[in-house]
Amino acid sequence: MIVEENIALNPASQGIVEKPSLISMRSVNKWYGDYHALVDINLEVTPGEKIVVCGPSGSGKSTLIRCINALEHIRSGEIVVDGITLDQNPAHIQAIRREVGMVFQQFNLFPHMTVAENCMLAPMRARNMSKTQARDVALKYLDRVRIKNQADKYPSQLSGGQQQRVAIARALCMSPKAMLFDEPTSALDPEMVKEVLETMMSLAEDGMTMVCVTHEMGFARSVADRVIFMAEGKILEQASPTDFFDSPQHPKTQAFLSQIL
Image (cartoon, rainbow, N blue to C red; front, top):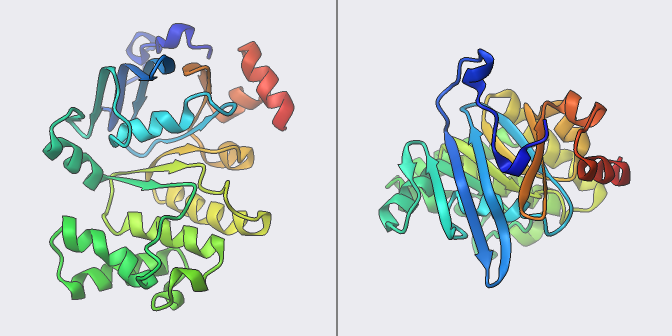
């Protein structure tokens, strides 16, 4: 559907029973100086939902998900995550970051720590786990992303795809209620993309709530419950993968898909 001025349709008016939202963005605006990066964004993400956000460079995709865990601060509007309003209260920000995992374009692993130590750090600091508990959790999720045998190596000894899987495991070690992915395969060589996408697909199959910024349209077709198209800081269209790819409505969506498919 085309989202006129980012006003989302009300599911209740269509006879659909709404789930409570895990992530809610209401009339969100974000500026960088005079540049209006996010324009009246309205977005609801329900538990277990998989959303893919796509669009041209500079459309606001990464800014949108970075605002969800206060890596960027909004000028106006409201963001609520798991019932907590994201404001300037440090306690609220930390509470949300404990529940929302983030995987970036770059892996951001500490080079002086082993793979396991990278995964152990946040649970020890934010969840007050002992070193033994944190290592057990780290090994569990490293096994989950099929890289447990690399636990005692350093990031520099791993391929890019392996490092990104470590970054996913590190986020999972906090037992997040949702995962945000900011173009997680864009910094990888083509042969390494597949292993990261397979890991993400496996998470989706397990019911993880996910918001993923990506140009991997095959992933969007097979995994997403909803695909969102952004341009010029606005959500212009959102639909099921079938409707989005087979019958896009907005001219800018049509033009974008004609260039990448």
